[in-house]
Amino acid sequence: MAKRSDVLEFAVLGLLQDNPMHGYELRKRLNGVLGTFRAISYGSLYPCLKGLLARGYIEEDSPLPGSTPALTGRRAKVVYRLTADGKERLAELLGDSGPQTWEDDAFGVRLAFFGNTDAEVRMRILQGRRSRLEERLATLRSSMARSRERMDNYTQQLQQHGLDSVESEVRWLRELIENEETGASGATHPGA
Image 1 (cartoon, rainbow, N blue to C red):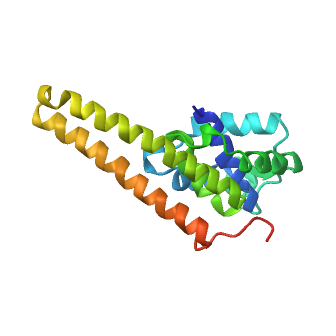
Image 2 (cartoon, rainbow, N blue to C red):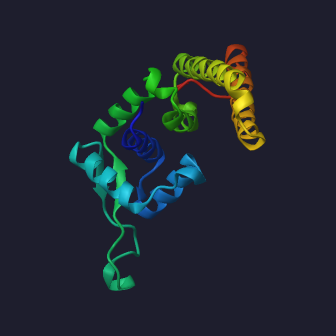
């Protein structure tokens, strides 16, 4: 299972690949990438940034023009930039297609950076995710069949909703895989 901190590290490195950002903008963009249900607090972001700085994956850049304390009365905003080591680390993470990339915690973030991911890696992640959800689907169906008589209507509806959600995602993944196979994804191979 992917740790939340690993997923956050990947997302930060992925966002900094495009251009340097200060903490507030990073948090705003991360919340956009990770979605409203996984809002990132400064209490999560700044320890992540501190760790990335310590490992040499990012560096602090000069403050944004016009953000000096003399002009604003506040502390200057620190801008974070990806280092050469950070670019290598991101390339390593983008090349990973192991089971942790298929999990609920990591898959959405991985998908957000598919435009920078090699086509073969994208395909392995999509197929792995589909396989994982098909297993979940079989488990849900079996569980529902065994316990239907013992559940009240609301519990049945809740389980049906979960089943419908997984079925919908499996259909969506099949379409994505088909698009990848036919080259209709619109994504490009990195460096192409």
